[in-house]
Amino acid sequence: MANKDQQFIKSAEKAVDFPVSNLPRIAFFGRSNVGKSSLINILLKRKNLAHTSSTPGKTQVINFYLSMDHEFELVDYPGYGYAKLSKNRREAIDRMIRSTVAEIPNLQGIIQLIDGRIATQKIDLTFEKILNQVGVPQMLAITKVDQVKKSQIMKLERRIETDFGKVPNIIEYLLTSTVSGYGIADLQQWIYTVI
Ligand SMILES: Nc1nc2c(ncn2[C@@H]2O[C@H](COP(=O)(O)OP(=O)(O)OP(=O)(O)O)[C@@H](O)[C@H]2O)c(=O)[nH]1
Ligand SMILES: [Mg+2]
Image (cartoon, rainbow, N blue to C red; front, side, top):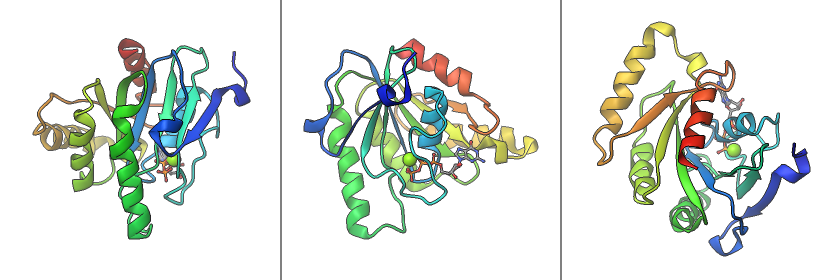
């Protein structure tokens, strides 16, 4: 078992600073506040190793983490498209994502998080296409489904299929919640199939 200090590997802002590793990596993308760091913590079985916050824009650099079993690494990216950041800062984060995603050594999978409580945002579709070009298996994690009424779940699934079905590759998605734990085992399973 790794302790907390061993599980945090490194922060980086540029691809040249990415840590070298033999382990497969899974990277996480999504709008600010969608729940990336929360999901990473639950997959790492840590409470707040990846810092979470109700204030969007918490994660400002790219953070690399080691899984509990030392089998893979998780890469936590800053959120894209956060309206309250200055235009310069927002564009810098978008550029950081675009210019580094294809440079992550040993990248085996991409998890893009989509807020299940609101309509699909244009920026999510834009980034879905950008991330798709990297050419590694891609999973959509629909987040915060604990806040979606049971009666609305099927509607949500149809909407995701319609919105993301237009992109070139057939899209895989999972409904998730870090509050109820819904979908987490399936996501973990997906990671083990792609690494
Ligand atoms: N209800 C609910 N809230 C969640 C869930 N996951 C995360 N949150 C909350 O959403 C907020 C943002 O979570 P973070 O994990 O910090 O989001 P992030 O995507 O890392 O945000 P940035 O670092 O700003 O890009 C926090 O207040 C979390 O507690 C979930 O499954 N359900
Ligand atoms: Mg974060």
